[in-house]
Length: 203
Length: 287
Ligand SMILES: Nc1ncnc2c1ncn2[C@@H]1O[C@H](COP(=O)(O)OP(=O)(O)O)[C@@H](O)[C@H]1O
Ligand SMILES: [Mg+2]
Image (cartoon, rainbow over all chains, first blue to last red; front, side):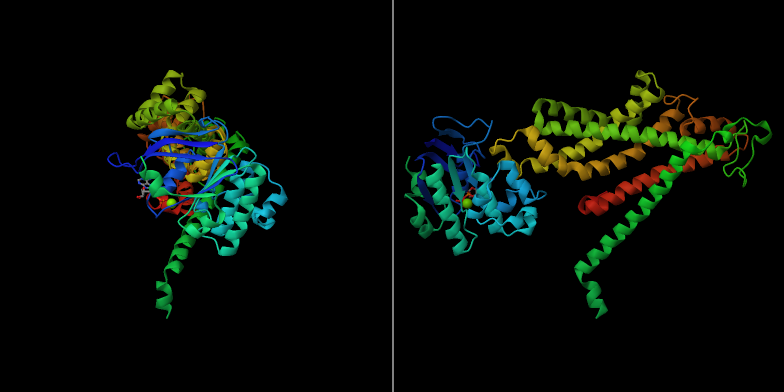
């Protein structure tokens, strides 16, 4: 169980971006989170995945706080795949950093074998995003946070990727937090949908 | 029409890039010629260094292009031998310096407390006049070849270390390193796999630029009598001995060795600068 305990965060000292958010995500659950841009969704995603520290509150997975040692069971897939990949590495090396992947798994994510020898600058954003997704999924991963993961992709690819993710939810008992401003997408794939404004507003 | 084309920006930029590449090729050729000279210094026999009073105090001629000294030794042979020694001393010192700079700058991600010590050391070394720290360390170590090399190595790393730290600072907070942390990679792993490869171009260029500095400083402290001992055929030794004979009109004793030393320094300095301009054009504009 991923538990968000009462977290608060602010960039400027005089204004809370959000205040005292509580949230629980269970294994095999797909939770949608939507809200207009600039409201703090990406910041929230970064905190849940351990990229940023909350000013108050904590994140626990099965009762434990991630201690920066070892792999975080919560993995984030962000909005900008080109920033999340070392530009000097070939794609094979990018995947190897995370672990070993079967050809079957990569095929399911739509990753072509010939991309392995390319540099990130030689792939499109959508193609890079599949690598980020593959990299985030490892045996130890229990929760995925997908922040506008497929916003830049065409409808067919988008459907394909979400289908893969949903099958992983079943197989690996993943819990997923899907952050998007596209309500129709969330309605299609989520078990429950939250409005970030309400989440941040109910004190 | 041609005017239009010449106004086309990318074309202009590529012209500039080509000019840089040509400059780089020139300095590479210069460095290779010097390298050949330095290596030949190993193989030149010591015939020219035999004391021969009949040929003493000769002005430059075809037989002795750099003249001879008061003992009749050929100044060309002495100069080449001196350059060879300076070259190896400089190379060794610059290499150790670069290594120190690399290891200390990596502390930025590996150990916070030691890193603040490093910043203090960098500021200290850069605030003190170079030649003073150099003489102090060399003197404390008792001079000689070992003392000079260690003193040079210990005084030439701060500038490069500062450069590398700035570079690490930039890359340290990139998203892909955060991702790597979140995948459970240690800072050692990240330093080795993400940061080190990123630093290598700067490191090589920094090494090449440190090299002429080290050579010049070795010659100056040797000249001042705090460096290599007078039985070593170093350029600094040659120059300081020559000072005693300048008043008797033997200008060639100091002129040619001095010029060759400056030439070697200039060639490697321009090699480093041109490399930087080609591989790191943005920073090259400032230097
Ligand atoms: N590093 C930062 N420093 C200061 N303010 C920031 C920073 N990142 C984002 N913000 C501000 O925080 C607010 C929330 O941003 P963000 O979390 O990206 O929202 P969303 O993902 O919902 O569009 C925005 O007003 C943004 O300008
Ligand atoms: Mg966002």
